[in-house]
Length: 345
Ligand SMILES: Cc1ncc(COP(=O)(O)O)c(C=O)c1O
Image 1 (cartoon, rainbow, N blue to C red):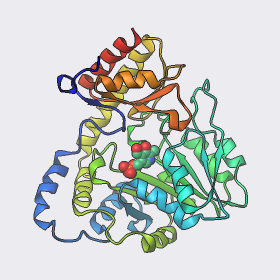
Image 2 (cartoon, rainbow, N blue to C red):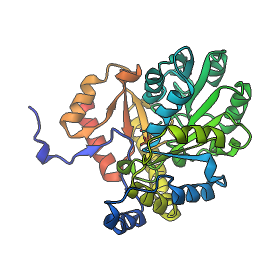
Image 3 (cartoon, helix red, strand yellow):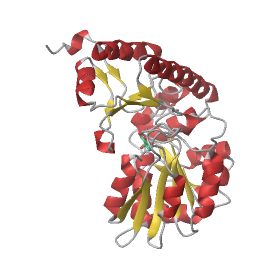
């Protein structure tokens, strides 16, 4: 019999959101800005760009703000690829890269991922990716760490990869989850921004900064690349409250640090809990974990939904045996495990 949702503690672990929410300072500036809702936002987002530039020791001209990084990931293919050209991504890469290629009318080429039993299970194979580049390739989309696998590759491996990529091919490194990384061998690709004019790094305020609902993301790229995209984007693509909240959130290192510590501890605990139940999962450097049930997981997912725990099915990614689980807070994680035990029994 179907349970009544009203009796259940609803647990949303399907979209890799930040369960702890944004900095209290972001909430305060949102209230402070309510008097200005009838005004358009700053079309240049100058204050936020200045704050981001200061944070990463880059110039504001290297930054393009977006209505979430999703908007910018889509726009890159539309601006720089098109019919007759190719966009390259990895098997099991983030779904938006394929959509971006499709919307641009470009041919999507998928390089094989690492095998399931590799240390970085189903992660990007950077050698397969560089081997798939040809004269038609305009854009390569990769993530680090990777959604949906949670895996990663070292900064050294990335430095060697971008050396193999021709200078006229744009390399987009999607770092939506970079803040959650604790592995010392993985640092942001931003360190290479000045060395490679064809490097674009995408970041977001939706994850570690807890502002998914306000839709703010950005890319860091060569100023000429940014200038072209500035001409194409909508005039007021980032909203007033989003600009103010992102700037305030960026300034609250202590809050973000607290979120990251909580996430790292809960991530390690959850992986331990899954493994002690004989489940195949991890590793992860993100705020989510991919579990491989090693059989079709549709029924398992349905049982979770029926118990008010939302997880992300992976059939669309070609991984029907897997479910992706956001790392929640301890109460959410306990509820997840309680339902998992019922499901597995
Ligand atoms: C790898 C990756 N990139 C980008 C995004 C989009 O983030 P945003 O909220 O900034 O559009 C997501 C969202 O889940 C993601 O997983």
